[in-house]
Length: 406
Image (tube, rainbow, N blue to C red; front, side):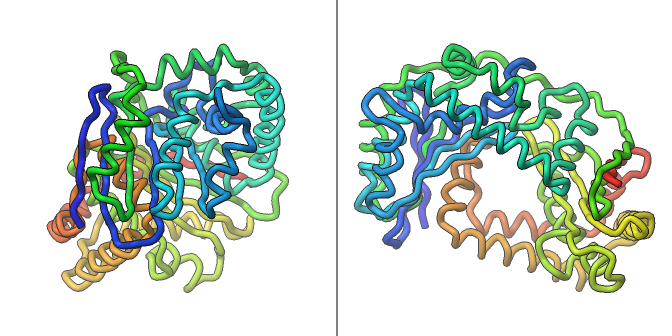
């Protein structure tokens, strides 16, 4: 399917893929996240994600929700370290309705004081709920360990004390400082011609005043490996072990994606799942993750296990690291690994909601989108020697950080 792009006069970029489907997906993705907050603003990007739905100049919160749900659609949003997105899924016939609503939310949200106060309690409960889940909390604390002192280190939800300090003026100040039209992408996957999508985008988003980003993010460049053990009243021991990794622009990024998938990706035949769960039965949850930021990246392995099995589990993880550092994958192993990743990408592209967000994020970051055949070519071009080089850089024992809840 052909992908069309365009840039509005105010700098907002558009990307659209026409598909044969009764359902459509549209969203606005902004290059603004929790790392763009000042220290006294921690949590405000995520808080805005909550209160942006609580009223506009012409709609109350109930009317915002009902506008999409009354026709069977869904409205959603998310915040990450570097992105904010507001998006919807709906029937094709409701493109106009959905794009008008999201533009109203982005342009005209008025952040009523009563709604702000009410939502503070909701977000604080979300923070408290998160603290009750060590298997989730440990990732935030590992970020603090890895990116010590840098804005990336701060958790996205913020703290109860800071959340309580947020008000309309602080919200508007953050929006003014961080929402830039040249860092916004309107992404669409649905069964309408690009000309219609362009017309609707002009109609509902061209009135946003042009505002381009002038200040760059604070770069991360001071990693120091560290280890920490924290006492927790939990049934299991939880562990995250990892290192900084390649940024989103790195030529080694795709190799890192493949290596991560081999080691502890989503499949049951990943090396870590076979080593810890299938062969030894000492972990139920075992995974590895790679996240690429604009200027740095992170790789980590997480597992939960019985306290008595912690040392054994760590030895098995580091053993898999050593194998990938010291022994090149054979031709058959490499071929299977590539086919597996290509298959996963192909299947995920059939989820049109994810596809819309992926197109938008790629266009936001790279100002282009590689076709699936192009992505497959990049994967096929990866060699065993390249994977071994990446493993020796990222799995270097001298650079590894470890966090344990015990």
